Amino acid sequence: MSDNAHDDAHTGPIKTPKQLLIAVFFAFVIPVFGIVALVHFVTSGQKHGPGVGSADEKKSIEARIEKVGSVEIRDANRPLKSGEEVFKAQCTTCHSAGVAGAPKFSDQAAWAPRIKTGYEALLNSALKGKGAMGPQGGGDFDDLEVGRAVVYMANAAGAKFAEPQRPAAAAGAAPAASGDAAAAPASAAASK
Image (cartoon, rainbow, N blue to C red; front, side, top):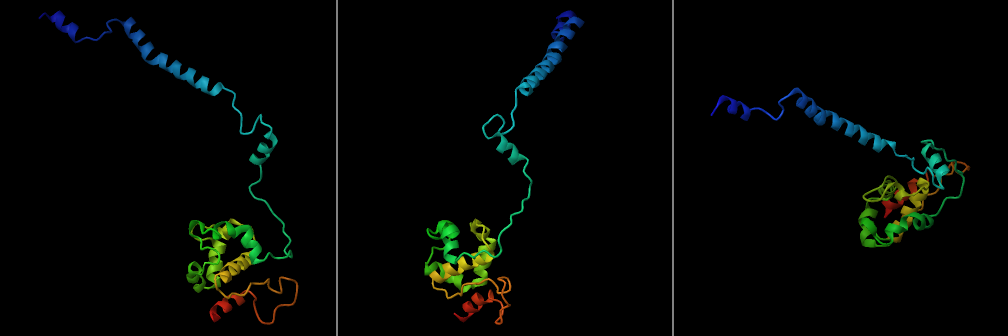
């Protein structure tokens, strides 16, 4: 084997500076132009924000720029809803059918261990949420109204809780002489 043949076997396809420039051009410059063209294509399309161009454009814009917090003014002296009204408005969905482990309405076997924990524990679970039930069962009621719903459901299953009342001082009358009315359900549970 000659030295010349041996050198040809170990050399690459690029033998001249012109071939080197062409190889660099195709290996680096062309892909860069391809990437730039692709980026331009992707970013050049007309982009619309959510709701832009639709019939609800104004509502959509207002929803996006709405303030984070809001103030809702309620009448503090409005009549309180009864336990049955709150139950029918909020609790019946799960407690009538026993959905997601909720004890069924008036099912004494399911409610007995819960009733033994007392009114305060039941009220705490209703207000803060427990298991699959969110705080206040996902409702928007006064805590006293939620307490009334708890008493309504527990009493339907055999408890003897007294329905909580708005404290007399909050209702605009003289303070109650016998103490806090909210303590009545707890003392009724203790006497059971």
